[in-house]
Image 1 (cartoon, one colour):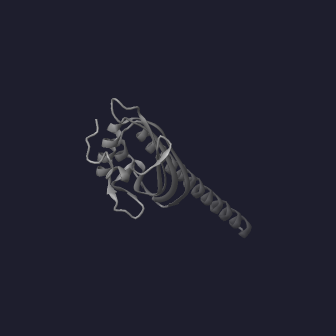
Image 2: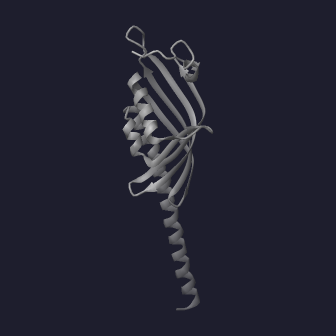
Length: 180
């Protein structure tokens, strides 16, 4: 084989390998983004156990630098919240900055959730909105991409359109009262 022909063959091999690697990476990024849609689907279905299916066995969630909460506790907390919600009206995730390295991905998202809260039989339902930024780590498993960590920041909430701090309720007039 002459040198020109060898150079051409090597060029084709290199270009095709780069093309395959780029395509796989683009597919991984799309698959990572799809996990966020699954998250929103589980929220809208009020399916706390569904959350466990899109996380790893050692999945954790936290706010800022707070203590990470393991998946089982997250699901338990969501079950209690979902019992108070009439509906989860909307859940959106604007995913950006997806970086894939092997079987690990990091991503950032802007999450927005709207829920209708049942306050009691003699009270009208209330709308709660939650806005947050997340920085997440996902891993590729045989079942596909799964959340390993979700860290929320810049969390803001509204109750019927007014700024709302759920921590204030812990010491307010509803603290310690059993919800209907």
